[in-house]
Length: 484
Image (tube, rainbow, N blue to C red; front, side, top):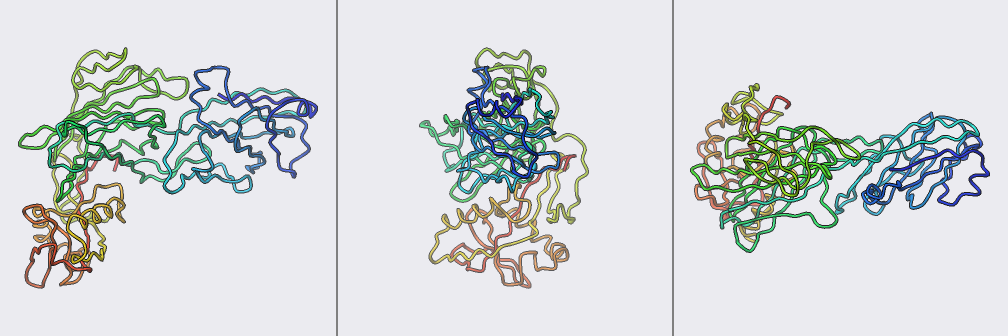
């Protein structure tokens, strides 16, 4: 909490101690002073406010007339009588973020994370204050957290052939603005897990600096990615509530070897001090989920569900600490709602629809674009090439939040069977290039290969027979919801 007081008379300015914020010289002669305190008397709140705290002052014409980039002590702001918008941002360090100068600042200026920097804990606040000439005025600003957090992720009983496990959350907002709102809707957070000594458990735990991400744009999709020497398999769950700011995320899942791969677990979105739980099960073709939580009680700042401690159990939601939520979690399927699905042969967000599963609301799409990868098989082995291709797919040119992947052999059969329809849709031979151009795929054994399209036939060739003009044109499994 930041306390701001307008102190009468410039004589007060001379007698007080603290950082002095110089207001634009073109403003009317100052007759009052804003006295800014960067910490509340409440010690528990003070400990949770990230540093530094920056202060932006806008006049009634929406012009920034004052900036203090590090309110480390009491700050004094000489102002003339009038109405001002005060914006405070905490945790936006100039070494980590690109911040607007006083001359550049607008109320919607982005606070952009610099390249290769880690997202930090951010808080914002805003208030409009009218200051009379030579009159004392008091104002209190409550900082609220602008980010979510990731507390812990655990995936159990992972097959021994898996060489890497990661978990992705999308879509997220991309950038925080000065006024506390967000811009960009294609953000994604991908977290790599570490294999434990037992060889079958993969996990992630936040360190003392924390792991932060922006809130989800809508109900997020949680995707678990299993990578082997030959391919990456992804399993997605569409959550039934948004990931809000000031909440932390905990995922606990177990791989069960059945006829169909299934993963069950718990996602806990916990406010700093409060938590709620989402229990889910999902497999290759479907996802179900329910939410359990108490009544909204909120914390010192922000809102959330009741509870405390870590809630990571399934079934009877009995979490750690003192939090025990009574009753079993029950409910229907997240994907059972009726939505309008695109037809096979049509396009969905510009991408060709190869197949539709009406029981799960999932569609298989073929990318509307391709990319020539320039990988030389004589100097690059298949494993290295696969890693390069998968890295490229992480930021694919269209619908970057989807989990794009190289087509499997069975998916390739679908593509070939719809060759004419795809060609008619995009005006290209099999929608990846002219006859004779090769496209990356997997063979029946799951090995990286390439498909050669001629005018009369399709041939699957070993990776070693690929060439520098082999193109990458991926597929993705997308869950269609009423909101998208």
